[in-house]
Image 1 (tube, rainbow, N blue to C red):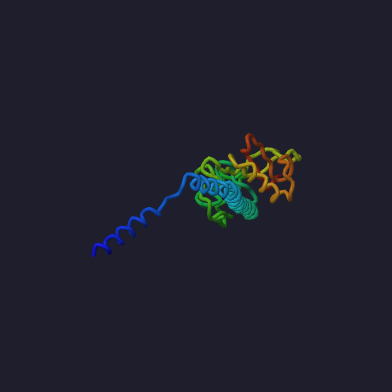
Image 2 (image 1 turned 135 degrees about the vertical axis):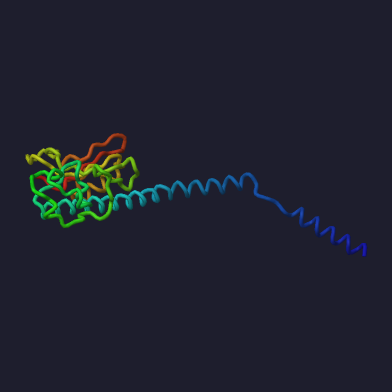
Length: 201
């Protein structure tokens, strides 16, 4: 009986003595490995997210642009800057809310944009956050300096420069000078205000 208990005590104490945790060096190696993997993967994940947001913004701009074009085809006029809500809601379709004297309630066949619900002034948030709002400008001047008196354009603020470059390549077919074509931009510290011309007359 004593012999058995001695063996048991020896086995238990032996198991306890052979156990050990991570050493400081092993922990440092694990942490360094995780840091290296994060440094490799984080830029790729960030780039993928930004590309997805840029694609969504392009889709939203395209919808608004098509809505403006269709409204012009139906009514022969554009909404005023502060009345672009008529693209969404027929109650805005009054003669005082368009650039010419027509009564748009007689030709309105909308809604011309069924998503991106605007506030009263026609702003909508871009996928880049609430500070990156977009505005529909219908009483603009000749912003691209090509001789047409009025440019219809969408202006978005606080857009990352990499996203602006992706949009410019898509809209202007590869040129990313921000000074010509249908997308113009002014950037500071890698943050841009972009203007996408949808029509001009």
